Each structure stands twice: as structure tokens, then as C-alpha cells.
Amino acid sequence: MAATQQSLLHLVGKRIVCTQMADDPQAIPAGTQGTVRSIDDALQIHVQWDNGSRLALIPGVDQWEELP
Image (tube, rainbow, N blue to C red; front, side, top):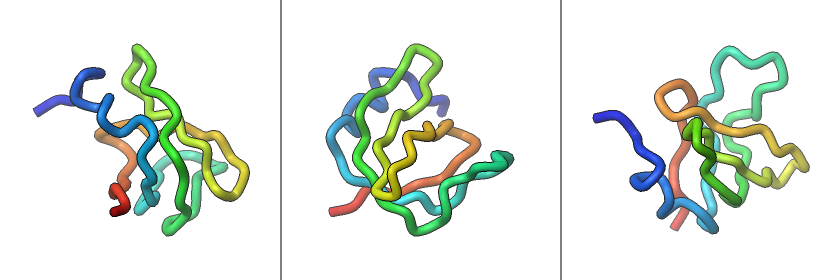
């Protein structure tokens, strides 16, 4: 099932952890935590990472988990 903006909106404000970011020379290291700030029209998940980065996640390419 393909992600939609509506299906991803529940993530805004949630804490997540990156488990894999593929094909990016400046990839977020696995295990890095951050807070989801927004979901854009291209379905990229914009995160303020705890390491200071703001690199977005791409559903279907990158992997992450919600933290409790």
C-alpha cells in the first residue's frame, strides 16, 4: 500500500529513529533520533534530527521506527 500525505500526518510531532537511509552521501546514521516537523506534498518526512541535520526521509526508500 502506497503512503499518502494523510496516512503520514500522524507522524508530525512524534519522535522517530532512523534505521536505514539509503543512497544519500550525507545519510543520517542508523540509530539517530529526531522529531518529525512536517510532511510535504512529495511525501517527504521532514525531521529535525538530534545531530542537527534536517535531512528528510523518503517513504519506500528510507526506514525508520516511531519511538514510544
